[in-house]
Image 1: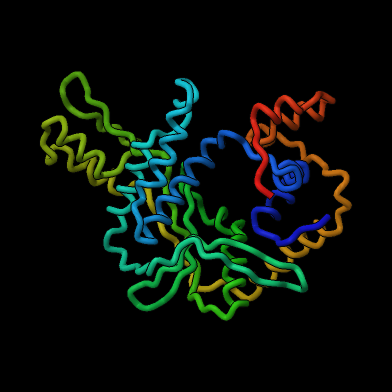
Image 2: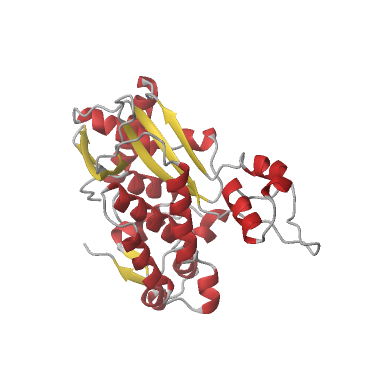
Amino acid sequence: MEVDYFSQSKVKTWRRCQKSYDYKYEQGLKRKTSPVALLRGTTLHAMLEAQIKGTDWREPLATYKEVYDTLWGEEAEDYPSPEELESTIIRYNKHWAKDGLDYGGRAEIELLAEYKGMKFKGIIDALPDDQHGRRWLDDHKTHKTLPDEHTRFSDIQTVLYYWGMRENGEHVDGILWDYLRTKPPTAPELLKNGQLSKRKNIDCDADTYLATIVANGLNPADYADMLALTAKNTFFKRVYLPKPSETLITEVVEDFFGTAREMLNHDGKRFCRNMTRDCKSCSYYQLCSAEVRGLDGSFIKKQLFTIRPA
């Protein structure tokens, strides 16, 4: 099998399921309407990229709105509204208004590196400098709930980027995971007695709770306990890793290109399915489940997919 370059996405897809790799990279199939999480994350990434580069982040939001407006009623209910995405970026910017980071327009930077004749390619989200002059390899992450350290341990992409920067003689002081929760804060309910709910497990932030107090003409002093409680809720989080260890870099790089070598040695004839209960979340689930039963998938391909440009 011929592969011009290896990316984290290609290797990750191959490891998860060879058939999914076949659909995506060999056949070039792309969903006409992206899955909710992917479309939301792609749009938020584009909005962040725009503002780092000094352009209007509302432009990629307008592009998303064009797609959103083509969705049918029930289908649109599954996707975030443009207003929801706008709120996420506004709250993100407010939260990090005094973070001291200088991006210098450095966003969506192509990275190329080589290992034993195999080429690696990646796109770095951003390279901000902090107020102490340290440069960080910034990876924007969008999640419904913020991940824990175990999730970060399995994130090989940033380690590969750190290695690739070093291979190119570029210095970075460490890795920065920049998390955005995509679930919007839940506003408190207005009770029959005219007061707001003080439910202790409310998934809300202090700004949203305060805005709801003001909107209903209530006294913030009466809700000091809830404002203190919701102030602890984190919708945006940044985790810094000063420097990956040499052992971690070596293990990740050798494992990555070990898989790359396996892909190169594949005969390109039979792409095996890794059938698990997670298949239902795959973009190619309907097509794959039809073909594995011996059905003709050509109609599904025509209805649900387009062909990626070569």
